[in-house]
Image 1 (tube, rainbow, N blue to C red):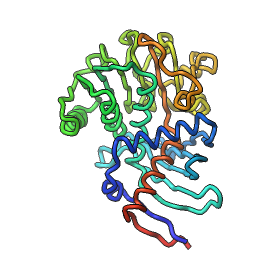
Image 2 (spheres, rainbow, N blue to C red; image 1 turned 60 degrees about the horizontal axis):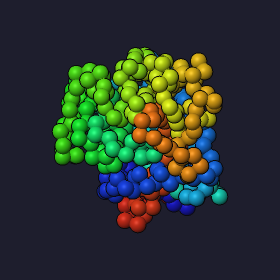
Image 3 (cartoon, one colour; image 1 turned 90 degrees about the vertical axis):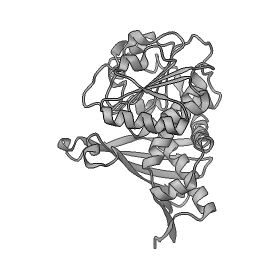
Length: 330
């Protein structure tokens, strides 16, 4: 029995398009909305608090794609000091009928891609038809695909970014400027970045809660996406929203981490105040945005099924192109 190992260099060779990335993740959301998935709540492993990091373990199954999978991703805030990505991941794909392993995939870039795709698909269904200005907090790995995939939908007139470390922010903006063929503006603070933006994305990496996205900056019609592991928003943020949407309520309502953890704990975000899950909207079970002046918040924790769908795309395309390393399993 063989399995396929697909590393980071292999994934680069596949040259996945924006359309392929968005398509795979959207199909997984549709399956979720149609109750054709199994999503187990993520679990965390913290080896030692002194290391300033933890592991996330995500598990899931997608019936229409005939695949199950488990992803383990390390999330270490200070990895940049060792010239390492803050997030590094491996994804295992399995045959759900037999349990036989199909592939082991470097999921570091997959994690970034699917996170950006989730932000962009959220915007597709929940943001206004026309959005001219994007304000993005954070320059970590997932930030790249947030901006790239959102811009592929809206072709923004202005993109603003801000991050805690000046050097990473300027590098991030420079690479995006080259990629998108338009100037990406480096801002001095979060207010300059977010105030007046049509779409506000908060993807920071904080050590302790800090209100970087102020509720007073949110205007009618805004689409707001806070998904940092540690909260960068105010408790009042949910008060100004017409709709609050999540990727998976079972995952969002539990655990110790997440941007809106305090909102869940204080009852501001509950089954009563939640509008729905994005999968329900993608599957046509509930409408998304219904008015241009609706103010909508989308909180995503990141779904195992999004990783698995993108991993399955990588696996199928790698087989077709003869890319990857075949390993003897037994």
